[in-house]
Amino acid sequence: MTVRVRYAPSPTGHQHIGGARTALYDLIFAKSLGGTFVLRVEDTDQERSKREYEDSLLEDFKWLGIEFDEGPHKPGQHGPYRQSERLELYKELAWKLVEEGKAYPCFLTSEELEKLTADAEAEKKAPHTYHGKYRDLDPAEAKAKVDAGDEYVIRFKNPQKEVSFTDMVRGEVKFFPDMVGDFVVLRANGYPVYNFCCVVDDWKMEITHAFRSEEHLNNSLRQLLLYEAFEAKPPVFAHLSMLVGEDRKKLSKRHGATSVRQYKDQHYLPAALLNYLCLLGWSHPEETDIFDVFELEKSFDSTRFNKSPALYDIQKLKFFNEQHLRALPEDKLLEHALEALPAESKFRAQDSDWQNKCLGVFKEKIQLITELDEMTSVLFSEGTSDSDEYKEAMGWETTPQIKDYLKGELESFDGDFVSEEKVGEWMTYLKKELKIKGKPLFMGARACLTGQVHGPDLKGIVALTPKKILLSRF
Ligand code: GLU
Image (cartoon, rainbow, N blue to C red):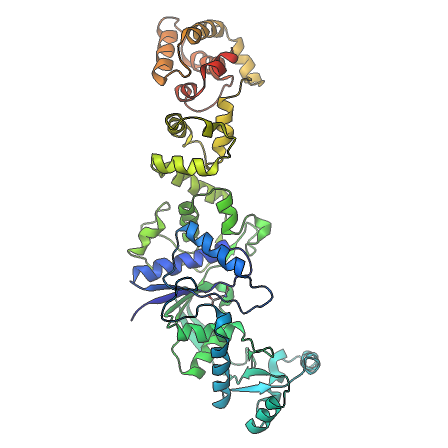
C-alpha cells in the first residue's frame, strides 16, 4: 500500500500552531513509510477563506521546513487541490447518492426548520428527529420540484446504525445509532459541507491516513457513514490530543501567541518550535526531549501518541529554543542573529570576528536570539550600576588598588579591544602581586571594568567592550 497523508487546512487565518503540529506528524509519518504528503486547501467557506491566507500558510510552512509533495502549488495526479475548484465533483457525487436512494433533496424552508426544532425541543426529542420530512418523497416528484427551481439542500439518508472504527490515537471508538439525523451534504447554494467534501477528497485523493485534531472525532461518524454509502474504504484516522492552556481550556489567543507567524516574527528557531510541538501528544521512544524532528522521517513510532490533552507552555518552548540555540553551529548562529537583530543594534555594527566572540560569550545566557540586543547594548553603555551591591563592592578596601592598576593598564594599552588573555594577565597580577583574592578580586574587578557586579564571563565581556567605554566607567 502506498501511504498518502494529507494536511487539510481551511485558509481563514494565519497558520495555527495546532495545525502545524498536525502537518508535522503528517509529514514524518508519511516519510517514515516512504509515502506522499499532500496539501489540500479546504476553502469552501466563501466568506472566510482567503487566498492570502493560503499564501501565508505556505510561507509559514516554508519557514518551518515542512514541504508538501502535492498541493495547489505542486500539481500531482490527484488535483485540483483546492476544494473551491472541485465543486462539480461534489455536486455530481451528491446526486449519485440521490439516484441510489442514499440521499434526497429536502425542501424545508428556514421557518419550517426553526419550527421543527422548537417542537422537537418542546417534546424533549433530539433536534434532528424531524429531518425525515422529505426523506420518502417520490423521487420523480422531488426531481420536478428541483427542476421548477424550488430551493433545496441534499440530505444524507442516515441508516441509523452503530458505527465503530479503530483510531490510531484513541483505539476503539464507537458511535451509537441516532446520534445524528439526516445531515446536509450539499447546501442550497450548491456548496458542500465539510464532512461531505472531506470524504470525497480523501477517497478520490487516495488518502490512507488522516491526522486531525480531537475536535473532529464526532465528524468521523458522518464521514464513515458516507464512506459506506460510497462503498469506499475510509482512511485510518488519528485524532490528536487537544492543545490546552494553563487553565486546561482549549488553547486560544488568551493564552498567548497561537500562530506560527507570531513565533516567526519573534525569531524563535523553527527547529525548536517543531521539536516542542512534536512532543505535545507524542513521546520519543528513547524518552529524549531535544532532537531534530526531521530525523523521525527515518523511523517514526506511531504507537507513541497520547490522547490526553497536551499543555502548551510558552516557558517550556523558550527552554527548547535555548537548547537549539546552543546546538547551532557558529555560522548558523551568526546568520540567525543577523536576521533577527534590528538594524540599529550595536551587535550589527561590529565585525564578524567580534560578533562570533560575542555569540560565544552570550549564547548560554539567552533563550531567544533577540535578547542579545539588550545584552550587547550593555557592553557599550558608559554608565555604572546604582545598585547597593555595586556601591558596596566599590567601597571595599581593596577596590581602589584594583581600580588604579586596571585604569593604568587600560590607559597604556594600544588598541580598541583588549584580548581575553590580557584580562587574564591582569587578574593574575592582582592575585599574585597585590594579593587580592576571592570575591574582592572577582567582584571588585568586575565592578571596576563593567560598572556591574553580575554578568557573564568577565574576560569574555571585557574583550568585547571598546577600551574607551571601559575607561568611561572608572
Ligand atoms: N479543514 C479542516 C480543519 O481545518 C480539516 C479537518 C480534517 O483534517 O479532516 O479543521
